[in-house]
Image (tube, rainbow, N blue to C red):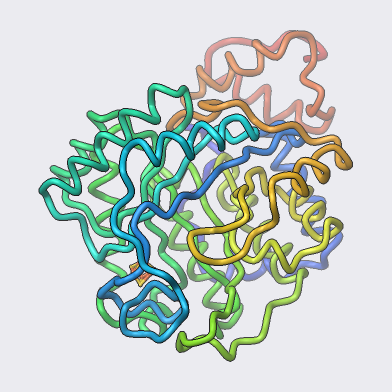
Length: 368
Ligand code: SF4
């Protein structure tokens, strides 16, 4: 495991990072980002709602909860063919990952789960990363998903342990951690993040990042969402967060989870290109494409591709970041594979790179 991935963050330490003067915070986050990622590559993912609405849970932000009166149109589980068609369309628009979401409390063994497993096998054959977010799963179900070729399982912590209770009462924080633990017993990678703008304070944001960063290994993927307040949900009156809060959250996530794929998720329609560019600079390296994020609006693919062109960004190929923890040996090889001099390396990183190399029992070539 990389020696500089710290797992014992305290809330105070995370808060101190979050509250740094913005120029220092951005510089630190961008420096960490360049150490572990190519800053010019951003993964484009597509989120498909394979079963919409009618959920028995009471997540206060979610228009799919059956108990809230929203104008969401529910749908039964999609067919494998429908999912394949949408995945192919997503691939041709530049997506390298498909995340399938079902509005379930937990997965039940039976024909519907078998159908999801078939969807996983089908997308897997398209050479795309396939992710699912289906609610709570058992260890056995995690193994069945792994056998079908699932690349990632999403299960968000949503907020700090303390604030979680204010938003959701039908299951607890430990239930979330248990499902993440079940996924960790397989070779499926973990995607887990949360939402800001639900009325939580900055201590709660730091508490959520502390909980995520304390997982060992840390999640390979962390979505940071800004609440999209939907009429009819308990959080409908929440005011939108400012872009600076999102930038601070992304930058802090990048610093405490250096290897994680940080995903700029819900709430992007309210962000300017300048704001999104700052988030990429601060370490975000994934976006969700498509005009809908499960049920809430999202910028369309063409707008995103124009933004990529403007910023000189390129869509990341699939499977760039296989499961953590990357060994020191693998990290060393990754540097070697970059050839003469990775373009995102900077002289001040030489010390850390040499430490990586030393631990691998090798020495880096001078100037690399
Ligand atoms: S977030 Fe998921 S579990 Fe919660 S109400 Fe919505 S669909 Fe159900």
